[in-house]
Structures are given as C-alpha cells and as structure tokens.
Image 1 (tube, rainbow, N blue to C red):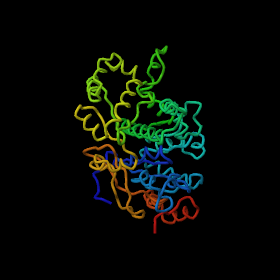
Image 2: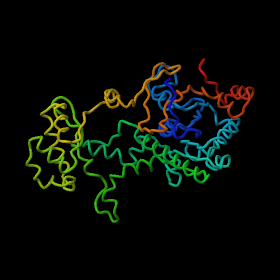
Image 3: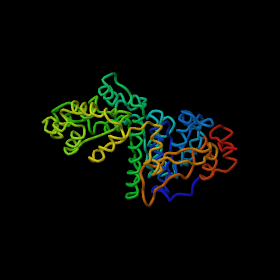
Image 4: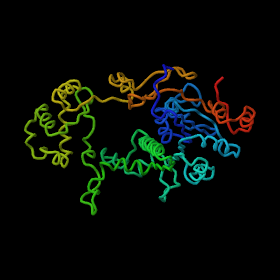
Length: 406
C-alpha cells in the first residue's frame, strides 16, 4: 500500500453496513472512501458480488475489490439468536446503520428501525431499499433492470433507438440510488452534529431514480393541467449520438447561438445560420431532429482528429469517443490518477477506481484493502469486548467466522 493519505472528512464516523450487490455497497463505498470506519456485516455465504466477474481467488472478484475496499468484513449469521447481542453491541458504538433488506424480513431478523433506535437513540438509520415504505410496493423485490423499466427509462431508450425498449448497459439505477443514499446519510449525520438527534432515512430506488430521470423529462407535465407531454425532445431524437467521421466517431455539442453559427460555417453550410428553425435555442429545440440529422450528415467527410482541431478553434465542445477499455488510458484520466494500482496482500496487483471528487484538506482514499469474508471478524469482536473463549464459541457455532488468510 502507498503512504497513508490525509484523513477523510468522515474520519471518526463508524458505519455498520448490512448491504449487498451495488446500491447499498456503493453508498457505503463512498462513505468509506471519505474516512468512515465501515464494518460490513456479511451472512455465511458472503456478499453475492464477491462472485460476479473474474478474480484470482474465490470470493474476491475485481468488482468486489473496489466496492469493499476501506471496509472491514465480519461474518455474522443474523438468523441465529447468538448473533443478536453481537449486532446490538455493534449498533451501540455506531454513528450510522445502512441496510438494504425489505421491511418485513428486516423486522423478522430484528434490524427494523424501532429495534435499532431502541439500542442507540442517536443513530442515523438508513433503509436503502427498492421502494419507500409508505407506498404499496414497499415489500416488493427490486433490481436495477426492474426500476429502469418502472421509471420510464427503458422506454426512452426504445424511443431514441427507434426499436424496442432496452436497458442501459450499466447498473445505473443502483449507482444513482447509492449516491442519493450517501448524501442522505451525510446530511443526517450533519443534523446530528448540530442537534444530537438521530433519525430514520429511507431511500427507495424507484423514487430516487424517477426523481433523477424526470428533472429534464417532466417538461409540459410540470404544469397542471399539462401544457405538453413529458419528455425532453433534444434527448429523444435518434440523431443524438456519437457521430461517424471518416475514420471513427466524434462527440460534439454546439449549444449557443454563436456555436451553431460557427458550426454551420465550418461544415460549409453558412446559410443555415439564417434559417428560422435554427436561429434560437427555443426554435432549435422544436426542430432538433432535423438539426442533429444535419450534424450527422456533415461529419463523415473528415477524420476525428481533423474535426477536433477545427471545432476547438471555433470553441465548440467536442471530444473523441472512448470505449470501456480505452477510457482507462485517457491522458486526462491518467493525469488526475482516477485509476491507481496497488498491491493487495493476497490478490496481487489490482487497479482501483479512486474517488472522483477531491477535497483539498481531507481527500480520504485507500486505507484498507478489501477483506476476505470474515477477515476482520475476530478483531472487531475483540474491539467490542468479547473474550477469546466467547469468540471461539461463536466460531464453533457458525455464528461468525475467522476469515483471516493464513
């Protein structure tokens, strides 16, 4: 591991993390990156994402190494009664608790808000679930694909492709919802710093992603009665895409009136600047399909490099198109160090994704590599006051596991 980094802004905050897959773990990954001591409770089988994607050893996939770094893993079988006092001790010393278990199962295993708040009245309790509990979907299962469809996002993909509805090739709902959950937990912690009050925080994937999506797509439905349909037309034309050039693709966004006058001149069609359809942003929005079709037709005659040079001279925003392989080697990404290489104690050299935001005084960063399942069980149990004989008894009963590598 590289030299220790300055402390993050959440240094001294302890978070108990009972989440799996991406939504909850992405939330707690952000909090851990910024200095929080995140204790990750795992059931006997471990987080399912340990096994998704390639890895050098069982349960240590590449994706898991990123999501679980800076977290300490304790295996705790919460279905066993002997685990309940251990869970209570963890909650007693915590500032926040984050889980992604639906309300009825959460109550069955004793992690509902009323139970947790009775143990620690000042705790910030975050239920990161598919749906907020006030609505009729509260106990329904939720996965990224389901919410992409339910929110209207998948239908938009179908509109712009001119084909069937489709899902984005990213667990975008999980990650957006994780961002909502991370800032909600931090705001609740800030409130507690000022007042001493803990509180319940509910973050539903459906509500969070629908709010995120409809920021630009509410449009005419912002008024009652509606004065037009929902859907932002600039984003719904089939011609809004990376544009094919003579040798590859380029991403270009002329935006202001000046940009468009310059663009029409560069592509050899200056007369379009006088076309009423394209003279103002309001008119361009109405005629966006025709406008972007002109862009697509115009860019095939030069190479990407030639277009980037010409567009830069005109101060029109443009960039080359990467794929998920080439973006890793982008010169800007390399310069800021978004991806960094480290030697994991058991997994060899690994590439991590660093925090994309930078705080000059408290940047946070890597303090602890991703644990094997239960790797920190024994140290954590010792921290909360258990003796070696008590720990051994819990291990023998299968309540916990000493997952420290030999």
